[in-house]
Length: 87
Image 1 (cartoon, rainbow, N blue to C red):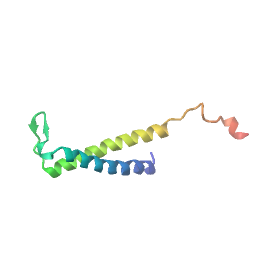
Image 2 (spheres, rainbow, N blue to C red):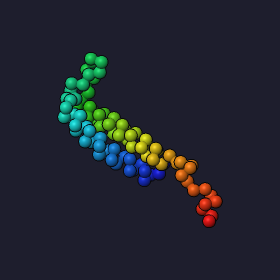
Image 3 (tube, rainbow, N blue to C red):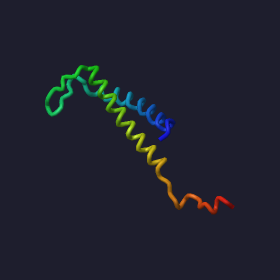
């Protein structure tokens, strides 16, 4: 995978993760986060940081999967044969 494709995936994923984090934490208070009924005891800044990086990772995986599918699918029936290129 080229650096250009990687950067084309990471930058939009960063922007979308920032927007998603704003939306997520405008609906949920980080002080009230519980896992299986147990308070996790994270500071607000730690919750924002972990939330952002988790959202960025999810957006990046989605973009990388899309890039892989776009660049990885090659239909041999649609590609011209070597004989056709020589004519």
